[in-house]
Image (cartoon, rainbow, N blue to C red; front, top):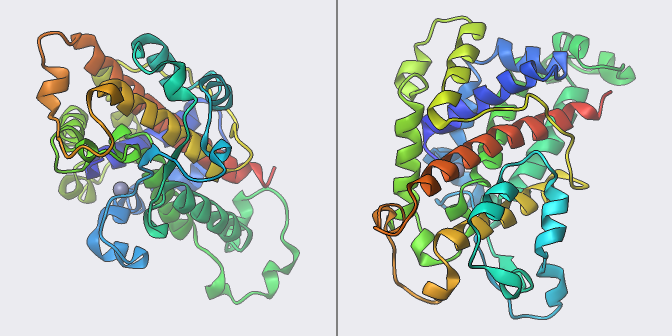
Length: 333
Ligand SMILES: [Zn+2]
């Protein structure tokens, strides 16, 4: 996803937490820093910040059929996946409406992803979640006043060693990046046709950022002097462009931990990629590419498909960010 889409998704997730009566302390930390910390939502894609992963690439969980031992570990049947994803995400509805090609044979197969550690969406999300919980435990006086409960040893810490709200908010925005990326179908599909420069992927993201518009564009946003309330309202106003209606309810994490939650989201995104370009039409070893036009503008494609895809991906990305953020705070209540 492009910078302005990442920024909008994260800020929209703050508004969703607010509209769903989410944790007040968390909302305050995020909202007070919505201008300064929002850069965190696009930092993971900046070249210098990728040094930690030892490679310059996107954040991915690109799956393909797995033929090794212990296959059962890499099979998640449709019903089990849908149950684990819960009722509130739109991706299951999308698959119910549009999947007429995958069938039981596809769902009963083993699939595995092989991302490098620094690019691994579930690893990055889990690592940041754990770090953020520690940051909240070690927060400075301002943060400690917002986090429920008392940390008895925090008074013994050097004041400079304690985390500031600005820091916590920036890392929350970074977490939003990895959560959002797990909703991009091409990030979860190992076929060459899902590669960034092979048409579909880049065009899909360009389409999203065209719809988001320029308000959250880096240059413009960094100069933004508006109040956090106004910024959140601008984020809410973009719902209409994607025809999204939020239920204003943020469920708890559905899986046992953020790692598994993200893997499940990626599995659903992989199924979406496989619906857009059915595996029967192109093998996993094929070097054939495909274009955005070919999928969404071909004579026999239903124009509702693209509208529904965009609505579903954006809705779920916002909701998933809110779920992962809320989960951090649940450790303290
Ligand atoms: Zn990324």
